[in-house]
Image 1 (cartoon, rainbow over the protein chains, first blue to last red):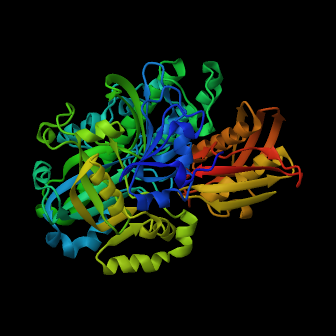
Image 2 (image 1 turned 45 degrees about the vertical axis):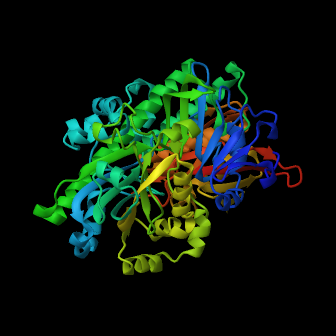
Image 3 (image 1 turned 90 degrees about the vertical axis):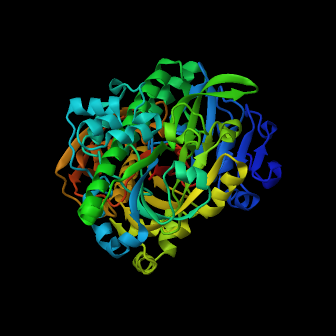
Length: 483
Length: 138
């Protein structure tokens, strides 16, 4: 593979760089990188931009392949990648969504201020850890029957609400109202269903977490008002996805597509980019299965919200108030959307792998109170640093198919992080700074230490400067629950 | 048979070497299971669970990845870590094997998937060993 150098990349604007189509003869479109120059040097350290070039070869790809400033090397697609292919025969690639289908983030807002909960943080962390099953392969308290599983896969977060694990009002504040109607449970294997039977309401491990934060800074008063956010307000972030069920769906369909690709005369430079036309039998089957797994993930985050609400009530009793959903948005998903390409409105399959939809004001799906503010975009930082709430903009549609970053982005391998971080010491240091961590293992704390991640401030500043989303509020963590 | 783990930005990269193709499958299973529960296959010799896996693919690289994916699926579906393989049939791009393991309460690592990325089963002309790299999405 031709090695990519900085000299191969053209600067378009301070925050936008391009690897031209001429870089490699199999590229169908250019590859574009959204980042400041300081981040670009870091990004060139791994092979994420070579992976971005590979993505630019996918049949039917439109405009450019994109990566966000939190990009890092993945397998097939880079993490932080966005690619849109044209319907009806543009391809769909499970690798462009990832194994954790509809991994995403939601944010709950409370009526309490940080000073009202300061002396109960340790107690709260222990209660949340007790209420929310987390960790490696852990199951939860819900064991779905075959019929219930099909209902979850078909109705998503609605199932949680209908079965006493959710709040009706939440549904309006979830991307697609927590349900993709194209979902078909019959497209999900029995093995995938078996793996999902007892994992609803669990966060899993790795970089998944539940975090209590407070709003440290507000950048946009008008949007913050629309989102009901105030300085000092306590909020809760939930980051997880479709668990083993989603992993199995991706595994099943990557294998199926690998065998189907020759039929469509498709060759890809990396096996993990395996793909088929969306309008093929295999493409339609995968899309319906992916939608069903996405519904499982939205249901999962709704059930976890119920566990958070229980913990919150147990600790704060009559002062607990209500925990309301600000928004729930996916960052590993493919959606059928309409965007303007070369002046023409086109129906596209937009793949976002480690990238967040960031639609601006007047987007018809948004709840009425966000219509003028734009879609909330939630960007978790690393454990112990900070996170952000942003608002989507019209420019995000013009630039990168209505997408922006999804987090800080890893810079150190887990092995390197474990070598550099003394987890018990880190836990104590964070406690001294008023951040309480409950985790399944010290290994998990070390792997997810702040040092392992890029500077989320720089990532978010790039996004803000590029205009694809605007900063609304900065969050500081006080409690972190990890697997 | 040699199993090594190398750093990867977000995931785990495993390098395998074995004297035969079949042993590469044995090494892959052991290497993956030792990740799921650190060192479990280095210490356990009596197994209480058995499953049969039948996998076919278009080449040996895909066969190994698909086989390990099947082992991983059974691992999570049955809460069982599999350490031992008894290969019943091994032909060009097809394997039937019994896998043996024990039920566990908790894993040390959660592997989302065995990926095809960077995997390439080849016989090294110099060492005369079969080898490949495997990246696990964790």
